[in-house]
Image (tube, rainbow, N blue to C red):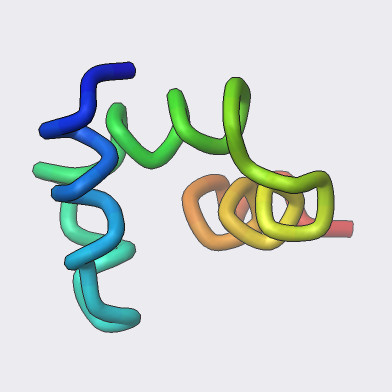
Length: 52
């Protein structure tokens, strides 16, 4: 993940998390860099059909 991509992620607001433009970037962040609790929360927001 490039520095530019990380900067983009850090500027995303809560309401932009569900924006399809950022989905792939957020999934990459969740899978590679995010702490487990953040990754889990992002995955729940990005994949609502998989909620228990």
